[in-house]
Length: 279
Image (cartoon, rainbow, N blue to C red; front, top):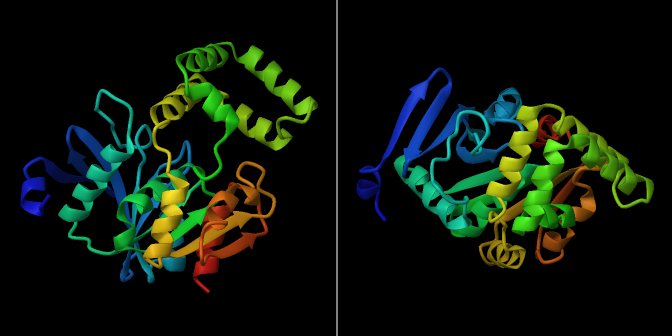
């Protein structure tokens, strides 16, 4: 598909510091941060938006031109399609975005939930990617709780019931903590993430709508190896949300990778990663 064809149904507009890319009825909102020679597509974590990357401008803005994209159901991006977000949808969208921006080669980064999108992007465009920077990435180790809650209609029904009857869900969570099947920090993170009706609605929407956005880790590893993509991991020494062991299914299959363990938990990893990259 060429750029001329894409321009028939893709358009960009601007408002404040946000740019908007419209494609097949959907809208990607993104910010441009920095002015460096390397184009870096950046994907944020759950409940955030692309603005989370704005503070890194002072540290790495001379190295990268960061296109910090709001994921669907976050920030100002909008998903209008009447079906689940799929990897093929995402590949077409990003391909159109790259074409209209005249981007050939690029790098990609993702934090937490955004790591899943960085991996799916790497799977689709490995032959055009120079670096993959994964910051406590989701999408490598499959969560059994996520699969139970989203894989079947019954599971989604139980999940939705629990979100509408939070005391029952909390009691179940605390029971799992007591018997050692759920980490206390993860339980606390869940409580904070579900504290308002709007947050609970976002959790259900994101968990269910993104359930098909699963990188094929075997394929990702093979492609990163084949194209000699520099792959770097930044993990938190005290991160209980996405601990270091969660990246092993991918790192065990890579010929080369770089691992940096930072002296922090989950929430401060973006800033500390940028600080490390600036050295």
